[in-house]
Image 1 (tube, rainbow, N blue to C red):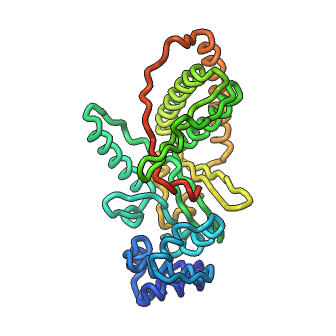
Image 2: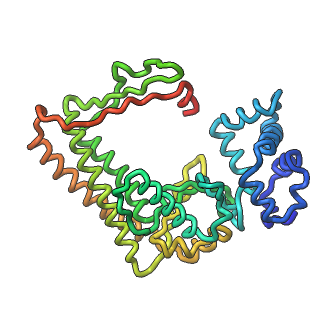
Image 3: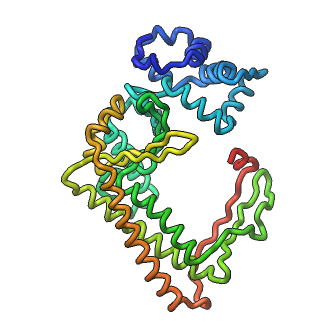
Length: 343
């Protein structure tokens, strides 16, 4: 086998690949990687049928049934599956797999660095925004990674990962902190509306209403102001980090008892360009900065957020008039039957 990740291949994976594509191990590394990232439908069905039998001892009457079963694995089996198939789907010394959708049949092999991928993705999204809104003027590229999903091998262990810009990481954490602060000030919950669950054809209506002990209007106005604050801070942080004199990366360990999960937080677009997919972890560690830096930044942001929430809540309580309702477009949400079964 020519692939350099032989040590990560489990016997079950090898046998399943052999059943789906016997000549695989005679191919070049490039052929192996491209097949692993974009299996033809027939090969994929055969591979999944074989791997289900290898890992869990389950045999199905047809490949169609096996494919459906592979899509509905319980979480514990899904984690086993993801770990076993990673050396086939991943590339480079860490078996890095970017678990994101790619336009126009692209994949991670088409990009050398994280920066190449991220800027390409950003330009594509900007193009879509301009097509949807001809008046959109666009924004400069300052790095756009935001909770992108990945899987890789870290120090011999299978790990899930998120990839974010520092501004995006702080924005996500601010959103969590804001939700907790608002809940503390105005306890609330969602309750089923009169049309929740109403069947229309193959779909059911999703109708949940906010209940806040009579303070629904105050809550909605406070939320609106906080959302605006969060977006303003995200934009300010993007600019601030883009001007940072020293690019780097913060490696945040978010693991729990069930799985290893890491968050790779990049300061700016220069840090993205310094990390290659084929040597992802090695390049990240080369530019790694102390995690306390981003933790201190988060503490300051959360403190400022708490002050903002207190001030805005006091202002809303003082000025809110329940007789003046803000016009809000209510959308009817329909959900296909079974869409949330796996959740």
